[in-house]
Structure formats: C-alpha cells, structure tokens
Image 1 (cartoon, rainbow, N blue to C red):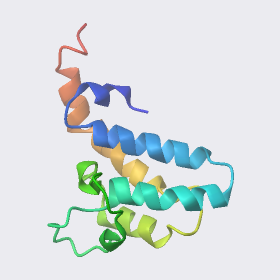
Image 2: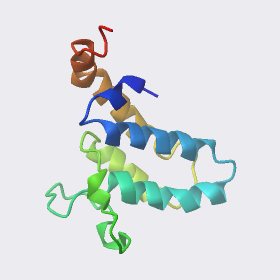
Image 3: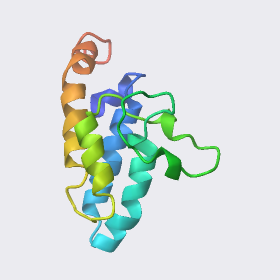
Length: 124
C-alpha cells in the first residue's frame, strides 16, 4: 500500500480502495469473495448520480441508508476497469479488482506523489 497518500487530504478514497481490494484478494473462498465484491463496487466504484459517463455501475442496487457510495468513489478509475469489475461481480474471481487497483497505483504515482515529495512530510 502506498502509505504517503494518507498524509494528503484528497487521497484517502484511493487508499481505502486499495485496502479493500487487498483484503478481498486475501479471502480464501470464492463464496467469501462473491459476498464482498458487491460491497466494494457499491463503496468505491459506483459513480455519483450526476455522472454522465454512460457506464452501468449498479447505482440502482445501492443500499438504502445514510452511507453514500459517492463519498468514496474513486474518480481516477477508468470506465473499462469499472465495467469489468461490475460485469464480474458474481464470479468470485480473486483478480476481479486488479485493473482498478492498477488504476489507483498509477494515479497515486503521478501528481499525488509529486505533491508528497514537495510537502513537509517528505522533508522531515
């Protein structure tokens, strides 16, 4: 996990996504992964209702309640990664969210890392 991203305010959703994917991949059985996958999609891959991307992200299946999926949506994910994860949500595949995790790592390695290098946290 890219630890520096916890230090920069706009990036916790990225690190939470990576942590959830890491935990998902450690689940031992397909049944456990099938149970967890919809929650990861709801929490991190469901675009806000105002999105005009045209990608089906299961917004209608969002759970009723106070926790908004859009609070943790990671906007740096590609539409292809999101679509592939949503299509395979019932598969229980261990690498279901691999493309999403790769998108997060690529994003964090760019401007967020350059910002971190320029911050007081890097120069302690």
